[in-house]
Image (cartoon, rainbow, N blue to C red; front, side, top):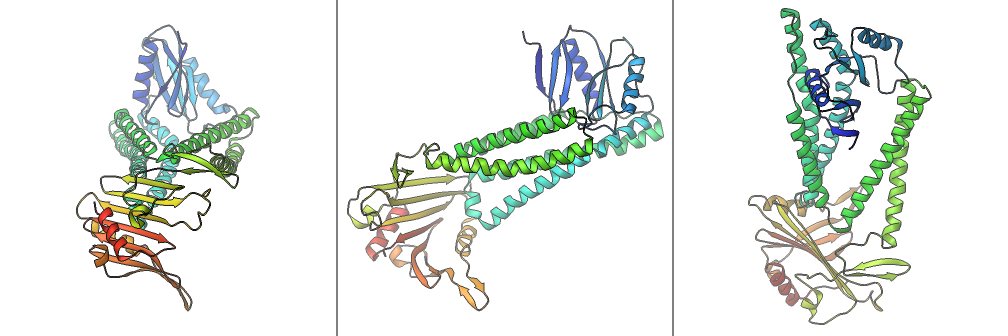
Length: 466
């Protein structure tokens, strides 16, 4: 039989009636609260009994205080003298319990009680609100930038769409509690002054639990939508990074607290350590993943196999491609990698294919290769926008009197069997890179070091429009 248990607790900071009721119910089941750090609360087994709980607030306290202040100790002594024993201190929140049948309340003045809660809230809810708001807006802004700058990559990528949904939910969950709190505080303050009674806050656990479930669901979907080895590297990187950072920062904070360092110095040092360790851990983990990739530790599970060349491990693929060099030339080749990936959402399907000679082929520099991307609109009404976005991704760059050429120019679409066709003008050259437009479908295809014949253009149209 376990003597301890941990529980996710999504209580609002100011919702003392719900907290008190929940702790009384837990005591009847034989569990006493022992710590309430963040959203994970720890309980220890006791004999089931009827206990009354009271939650009060001490605005001057912080989680970094090396020890309770004299003023806080006076509060504890006063409460104990009236039968209220301290159960847990969680920064500004002080939780007491009383074994009496009808204990006298710790706070009896509703105006003073609301003012006390508000002073504590300004040091916790508001700080979290502004930090959460800033973080949410920054990440949603990044998503919006990606959406408008690279609409194809964003709308075809389930992971990016999930990321946008996740940060939207995060922003909602971050701002919901402060908004609810200020609405309650304004009304409660008026009622306390006019009617001398306390307006109890509403229980918001259902809303917070729902948002948390939705947030975790979207996060899992985002991780599952990461392609191939990228999923492994992303998950490994994220888990290692967050775990190491949390352990290091918490260790530093607790060490300084044990050494009786003041809360201000503790906060400053902890913040500096967290920033420094964030940078250092990113560098260390990135280096480790790069080296691991070079040695084949993060091999793509979709790869057909690996081979070594110049002291590095390379992957090769044997995917089925809609268009191959063999289709275009009629010849058969060996030592090629055939790689095809697909990103698909309700908006777009983006298929990227490439056929490249392997580096261990005797004459790999002389062998032809080909790469192409097929973009298909899955819902009506967005194709024209997507087509224009793909064309406009290429923009000439003006540097004083010099213009660096980088744009598509229209060409005859007839040989391609297309509605529209464009060829890339880059630097001082016209490259064998083409943008082909059919009904609800775009193909961007590159012929490296060779130019397609009209017959091969017809083969491209036949293969890529199916």
